[in-house]
Length: 262
Image (cartoon, rainbow, N blue to C red; front, side):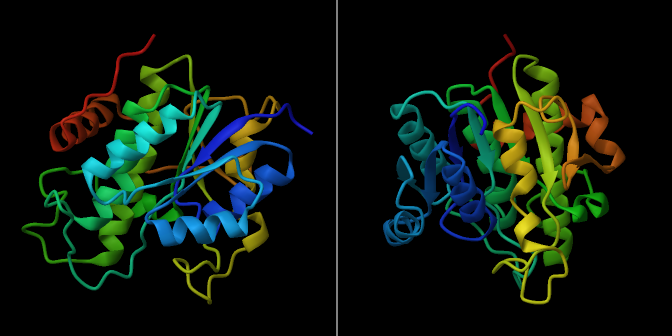
């Protein structure tokens, strides 16, 4: 078993986040769960009764993103954070958040950015991506879908490209942190749907491995993984100027800047 680590997993009341949290607890790690409301928090606690704690907040709004970060920091420093919380590609229309942001962008992109900026810096950061990131568009000129005709699948692809880009930007800016992104596969969660073809049991494996393993292959930074192997990304993921544009955009939208590297 790996040395016991403290790990915070966002979006861990269900789906891959819950599976990752459960696996970490089974391995002997101290896990803090996250749910968007009190009811979901109660459900999460029932599913993983040995979790160390549960924090509550709806990551659709910047104020609640900040509240989640405050709750996490009040519990002490974590060894790893898995940014798992996300919404999928089935939204039939552009939904907006309390801050006027596209729902998909707020949860899938801005929330991991804000939490990364505010939570005391851990040793490892893992960002959930998707194979659909390779079809994303990195143009930020209409990132909130205010002018384009809405496409749920394209909005999701864009968001996962941005999430992957965020991982690589953090890896570049914070050399003291291991930051990576993960494509967990298309698995049969509520978000993935019953027809998803990939192995659900393998879905949480890579993010858990990156969060706690001492394997040399897991203690790297600035990589994108699929089933514990480096995998290809959209080419813009590696472009420093595009990364910096995303960080600046998120800072403007949230009012929160990513701290400089140490």
